Image: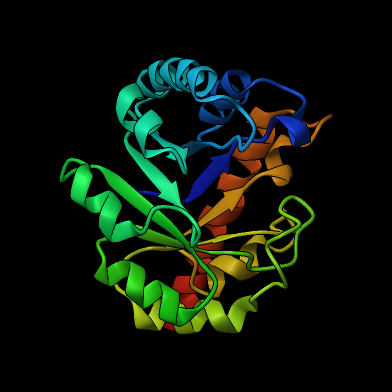
Length: 215
């Protein structure tokens, strides 16, 4: 699985519908779109998910639902992403198909190791840097935590929180397998497709630099 540029939808940040964000993000080359909406009723979220799954299939890319395992399964999504206060990874894994992707937000190496042990397919260090998008996320964990996490687990480690075109390169060089982005590509006034294309370019070039550094 490739998680290089992983776009998390947010209607408040973008001012656009989840479906519009997904279409534009996939058109720009996003590897994954995650439907995230803490306030949307389950019925409406399912309707949005069913539309996005069609879009994802047209682009042959992954579609993940945040928190709601029931919505993800009902919509036929590729997986679900859960946080530390959601249904534990091991319990999600017990009720989903074997090929269903389960991602977990983590803020420490201990949480990452636990998530891997319980069957997570990837973890997302949250937040790598302080962010205004998720005000309850706490202080940024930084590159040092990212590097320790990469050494501690074998599954992909993504970074989320406070990511921009300016700091994306250092995060990839620091070891992240992918960047989960919100405002960096979705903010009002941005062309989502162009912003995602630019982020993909930065990630690709940073990976080349990272490989040179490690040689």
